[in-house]
Length: 211
Ligand SMILES: Nc1ncnc2c1ncn2[C@@H]1O[C@H](COP(=O)(O)OP(=O)(O)OP(=O)(O)O)[C@@H](O)[C@H]1O
Ligand SMILES: Cc1cn([C@H]2C[C@H](O)[C@@H](COP(=O)(O)O)O2)c(=O)[nH]c1=O
Image (tube, rainbow, N blue to C red; front, side, top):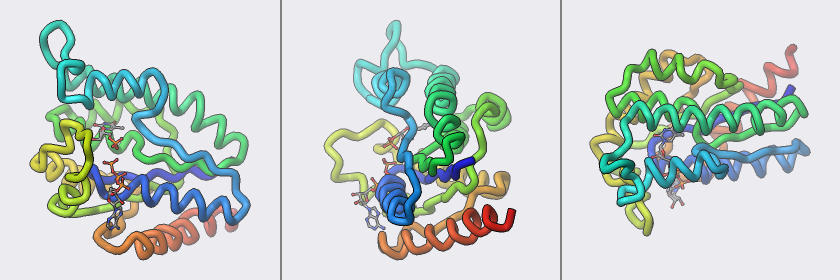
């Protein structure tokens, strides 16, 4: 069985930066790595980017924005394909899978949109649990600074208030899901990478060796 690691956090927390650094670290140790993300690059992921994550006309169906429940279902459908077609087969082949976002994003964001947390947990029950989930925790003010320079912004990027709710939700989720570990994302990229490596060595590799 392989190793499954997830990076989570509000927009601009540094997930993709750290996912790439961690993938390189594992590769240098000789592991075969699958670096992936949600929403995925498949047809489902593209549909989500068009219907949910673009603030313009493309997000409108039959004259109105899609409901938050429909959004949650689309994210879950994308995730089901991700789990069954990529994550599970890669783990069965003994690979290291690193995902930039996973079902915790649905819990944190769609909960912040007003949906019921337990309904979201049930909807995502099919999602295989990671060995380790790293929550990159960053104050919203800093995340807004980091993402402000982007040319294309999602609706979420623009709304600092929503990001505040999402950050609070992630911290609450870290109390509920034992695989979530919090890292201070205000530090330098290098320090954060070193903190992540220490967690991986301690929480994942050592436990596998002890089995
Ligand atoms: N520790 C850090 N200190 C300062 N800037 C950082 C740090 N980590 C990442 N950045 C910068 O912040 C921006 C956002 O980083 P990144 O794309 O990795 O975040 P993300 O969490 O994947 O964002 P999103 O969820 O919105 O895709 C990038 O310009 C990146 O270079
Ligand atoms: C998986 C997932 C994502 N989201 C939101 C979170 C972000 O605002 C965007 C994705 O943007 P990124 O730059 O590609 O990280 O989608 C969500 O609301 N629910 C989810 O399940």
